[in-house]
Structures are given as structure tokens and as C-alpha cells.
Image (cartoon, rainbow, N blue to C red):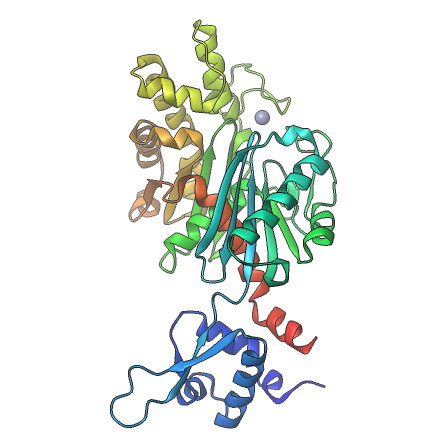
Length: 391
Ligand SMILES: [Zn+2]
């Protein structure tokens, strides 16, 4: 039977959503904001306090007389476990519901070791980190994981990931959920990075593109403040847009892809062809920093190639912010200059009028912050809160 509040569309979950902006509010303020009777507001608050989502505090702004009781979102009541798994390294964090990072860890972890070895390591590391923060598994409300390959979002399973042998269709959410006792959400690494950058840019930015230039190239799209995944979760795969008629072969099997000319792996290969000993995208940036004119030139040219694709995307999607991340973004202005040059010269003036193109603010942390945002938005969605409290 629906409760009175649900019938009016303002359940406990919707009231919690109001309190999530961090401002403590009195019963009177909440009644005014929701249009609910004071008695109903009290009822909702009692339920939220029973579940410790909300704590009573004192209204510091009331002047004179007895301070009114106020209520605030209890950010520290639960934690999220966040993991950003790359091709060879992992970054993990324990983050509370106010997005404060309580513990963080980075490690070398080759993803081609397969799902069971990788995820077993992950479970142990998370348990150690929880112990460090004085928390335990009962306080974990969700787990967010980013993987370096395509993920079917609904099932959280990787789909033919090119650099992840053994991971195809592996049930990551079920496997981790059994061991960590919390809901597990999985997405590809670029999408969670886009969520992380959007979180830092909120609330002004509604339409944002995050482009990762690392070994490969991909982008995450935030449209109307929501991640746009597309029909199958493949949206944003700009690395395989054809940019040249030359027959340079891409790892996807096609020729002339953006990634095959401007990705970190392609730049490293170009340098090796000149007899320079480099392995990957990080080496290319290190070489540029050490003063290599060839590396600097390659990075600038890669920026122009990426800019060419982005110029079309700007016309098509009209974002207000483009954030550049990934290893190659560490090259800073060398890569940004090339991207800006082409976007501003080729996109429509109306689309670029207020467009900001900048490097990632979160850097290496974008993935774990975004993984936590993905989980928090799910766990604290009004519908989920009402459901949890009914159960
Ligand atoms: Zn390709």
C-alpha cells in the first residue's frame, strides 16, 4: 500500500535528495520546500533518522530564542568502494557519501592476469583499506568499478574487451557482490572519468565531453547532466573514427582510425621507428619533458588529429566543456594547443562561443571519483532509498 508521501510524490528518498546539498534544514523549511504537512515531514525525517541517513543538528541561523531543530544529510554513514582498473595499473579508494576520499591506493595490476586473479586482489585490497579507515563491510553501500574495455552497462559484463583476455562476459557484479555484500556497478573507464570530471564541474555544466588520450582514445559523454551510454553502451568510441586515407592498421582491424595515428601506442611506435627506446604513452610524455623535439611534435600533431574529430563532435553535440585526460593529457599545453587550434578553426562559431577546452582537474583520480559518483547516484536515488527503507 503506498504511503501518503509516495502518493504525493515526495517520499523519504525525495526529502533526502533535498538535504543532500549539505544544508541543514528545519521541519518548517522542509514543509515549505515539499508542500507536505509538518506531521508528514516529521514522519519522513523519523524514518530517515532510523536508517541514519539523516542526523539532527541545530539550526545555527535562527536568531534569538531557542534554536530550532534542524536536519542534515549524514554523509559519513556509509562508504563506497571505488576501483579504476587500467591495462596495467589500478587505483582504489574508499569514499564517503559526501565524496570525501577516506583511503586511496595505487598499484601495478596487469588486467591480462584475468578476472579471478584481478578481482581476488581487489577484494583483499578493499578489506585492508576498510580496516585502515576503521570501517567494515556492513558500512559499504555499493561498489563501483571502471574497466579498460567495453562494458554492457545493464549487466556490468565486459563485451569482447580487446586487451582483457578471459574477461569477455565475466559476471563482475555477481562475483564481487557475493564477496563484498553490496551492489556492484561496472562501466568502462572513460565513462566513469567523465562522471568524475562532471562532478567537479557541477552544477554549472550540463553538457560535457571527456576525452581520454592514453594508449588508445575514447570519450565519455555527459548530456543534460546524465551519462549518455547509447543503445549498447558503445557511445563515445571516437578512437575508431576514420581520420586518414592512409592504410595504417588499427588494433580494431580497420585502417586509418584516429587511435592508430594519435593514440599513445601509435606515437610510441613512431618513435621506435626512429630508433628511440619507448614502450607506451607515459614514455612519450617523459621524452617530451626531457626535451625531445620529435616527441613534442608528435604530441602536438596528435592533438590536431584529435581536434579534427572533436571539431565535428562540437558541431554535432554542442558541449560547453571538453576535458582532456589520460596519460597524453599530462603533456599539457603541447596537446591542448593542437586540439584547440583545430576545434576553433573548424567548428561553428555559435558552438565554440562559450566552449571551454581544458585538461582534467582530477588527473589520476578522475576514475575513482567517477566510480563513486556512479554508485552514490544509484544508491541515493529517491526510488532506491524508498525501496531500501521499505525493505
Ligand atoms: Zn580502430
